[in-house]
Length: 114
Image 1 (spheres, one colour):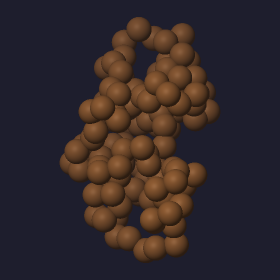
Image 2: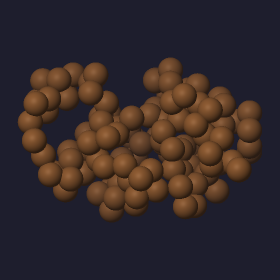
Image 3: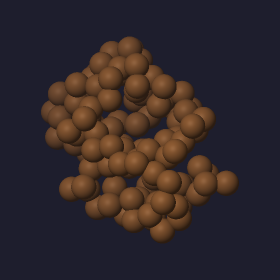
Image 4: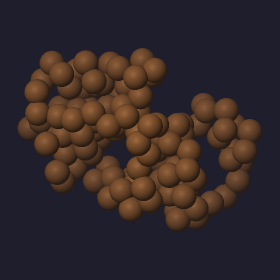
């Protein structure tokens, strides 16, 4: 089963979902702003993405620009920040059993469908 962490208000997330829909019916949608990831879920997702927490931060968000930019945080601190502020997570993130990708551009999702 594939899970797409989706924000319906984001055009990139909508494009990723549309692309996923065109490729498979075997997926579920998690609206992660309404149902935020726990720190444990974030750690698992980061392992599948093969990324550090700071690698998936949306640096164009106001919260980042006003409160976080230029500051140093440990990985544990970043995970806590992302869990408490899911809007800061790149989107969409698409997760399969052993791997995950950031679905921007949507063609990245093909890596999960091989």
